[in-house]
Length: 260
Image 1 (cartoon, rainbow, N blue to C red):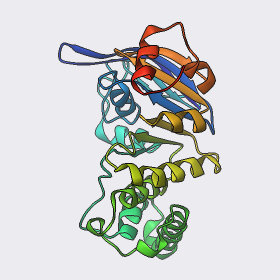
Image 2: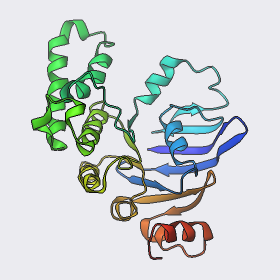
Image 3: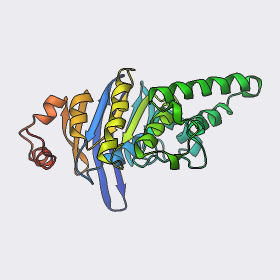
Image 4: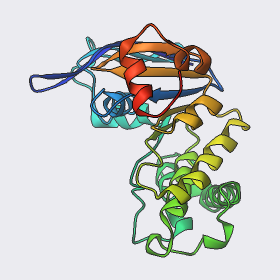
């Protein structure tokens, strides 16, 4: 479903990504782990076109979404269209405080729907469909009773669950999470991780940048360990957490209090 080929990204003189390659199949969960500064978030931002790689290709379902050699003059509208393949859940929720929970979820799909040539004719039907899906997603993340609440009235865990529902509302092919529990207290982390685990039963394709090693071990089909802008180790959870011949991952897991 996704091929990432030889991705490089620098900021000024600092080379952050140094030739990243991996593939992801439909329905798979990929966890990306590694120390701060290893390039995990930059990779995720490149996949979501919040940053453009300096080199490399991103291929989705056989279609070349991005080729650094041929995308020097890519337009903002082209980026927006490419971004629709990916949903992104941020560390700090990024809900719109002026809208309630329900409107946060409906806002982007309704704005997107207005671009349809059939919108004026079928506006009522289209909006009803979007709102029905929003209600279904609220039920899936366990927040039906909070649909009229504002973000200031929610706990961090509830805000992150709304953010997940909002990302799903746009029907992304691949749902990406950037450290989805890093801004949460330990007692709220579990509720968010349970929702993400539940998405796997819907055959969702996901990329999760995480520092939750137990979550990565139990949910991911594939794990990538990054260090210094490259992929040091890649494989199943058993292969990655059982890797004893790479000093960088041994040191990382030792600091995470993981037995290897």
